[in-house]
Length: 107
Image (tube, rainbow, N blue to C red; front, side):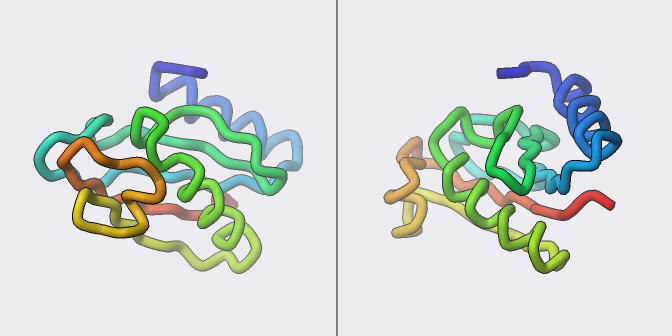
């Protein structure tokens, strides 16, 4: 996994240049104990390959699923995961915090 945000963004650019359909997920807000800081990125292609991290692994699967819809429709989405959210528990975000993640298709 790439750890530096600029490496993740460079990978997104390279994937688009290679003709892959790509979405990027960005942590835009956190509350409490959040596994990744604001500005963290996860880059996803139409085949479900991904690089980076928005949650230290605990909600990436759910974000990748949502990104597939974003790529297909072109419509961005704001996702929110937290300890009180049943979806977050299924996804594994039990750290006690909340995160808001914006997912958009790169053109």
